[in-house]
Amino acid sequence: MGLDEESDSQMPFLDPNYVSSSSSHSSKLALKRTGNEWTALAHIITAVIGSGVLSLAWSMAQLGWIAGPLTMLIFACVSLTSVFLLCNCYKSPDPETGPDRNGCYLDAVQKILGKRNAWFCGIAVRINFIKLAIIYTITSASSIQAIHKSNCYHDQGHKATCGYESTRYMVIFGLIQVIVSQIPDFPNMKWLSVVAAVMSFTYSIIGSALGLAKVIENGEIKGSITGLPSSTAAEKVWLVAQALGNIAFAFPFSLIFLEVQDTLKAPPPEKITMKKVSIMASCITTFFYLCCGGFGYAAFGNSTPGNLLTGFGFYEPYWLVDFANACVILHLVGGYQVFSQPIFAEVERWFVRKFPDSKFVHKNHTLKPLSMLSFSLNFMRLFFRTAYVAIMTGIAVLFPYFNQVVGVSGAITFWPIVVYFPAEMYLTQKRIESWKSKAIAFRVFTMVCLVVILYAFVGSIRGVIVARFG
Image (cartoon, rainbow, N blue to C red; front, side):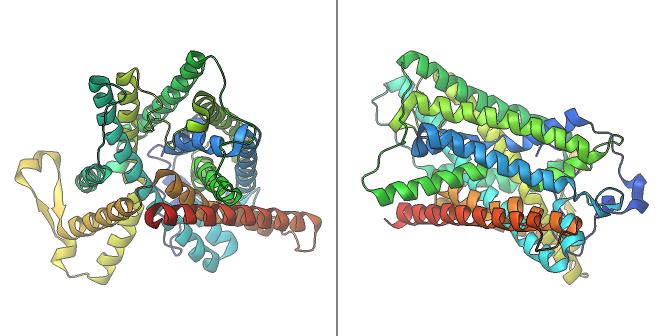
């Protein structure tokens, strides 16, 4: 969500038959590319660092002091490998000279691998948008709940019974999204990326700082080599699977990579700039994640909460905990819209094509109290977007389990988007025969990643089922 308005960070190209204006060399005037390595670095870091960072301390606790950091480094390397492969997919059919440019991930898949693969990729992209809406609802509700609990503990003492039902907070967040989703071009407002960047960095830094302060206060580094003990070996195996899913959720930035690359000016060649930027971004985010996960685990050890800012390892300073959670809420209110608007646009385009004469679909109604804001109400838009938000909120209410749902979310799209499609596009672009050693190495790489991600997915699904029905 850190892209500027020229780079179209909302990725609306869900239709495999759609070709973006930036994908053709004949439309050079359609997009002015003025970005450099520093703007690209800012875009990527802003997009990557988000709510996923809140679960990393819990993931570290399941894996322990050796496997935890090592797993984060491995996922960072897989993500970095993915974007290195994508660097060669920006131009096609020749990765060096083009002449066509692929301005978004789905364009690249369609141009290089064909419509069949683009159809499957489109499903993965849609799932990615939908899962984020559900997770953002759960996370925002937890943060609203945490603010109330923090104030309660401050007023009545740390041992007070401060119980608040999360369902009503999810409904409140859903109502906010229903209203915000009716604002025209909300995700394209210039201040949205700035707010998102400031908020995500703020709550992540506060979480890390509180963890470090707690370690200093304890006078010791908690935790163990093997991680959190479990009642049975089988239970430990499933918790490790959930931890892998949580880490998988935090790292990838493959989906927005080509859009960032499409903002760069040349010379130097875009892919050279992006390789340098990718290394810097991976190093910064990995260091940041290791700090967040490591300080949280060192502070709480076996008592590490699932969400670092809402699990109430931290009671004081209560105002700082409140502020961090308020930053989470503000970040996710905008983030929800950024990742939901492409779904809205696609479905509403379908309605427009299907019902060309329907007033319900086409007619906009100007509301006199809001006429000065150029705000108009469309009944089809109101009905569909309200229904979408209601469904996402309903799913979140049914499965309000942060770590388990984040684990499922991280695992469900990681392999196709981060591993499979980039590897296949690279092999196709470079015309590497399947029997060559490089092709065999990539096939082994994709299969190993698939096995790991399937393990994380099954373990996280089991976690959701046990939490809901166990």
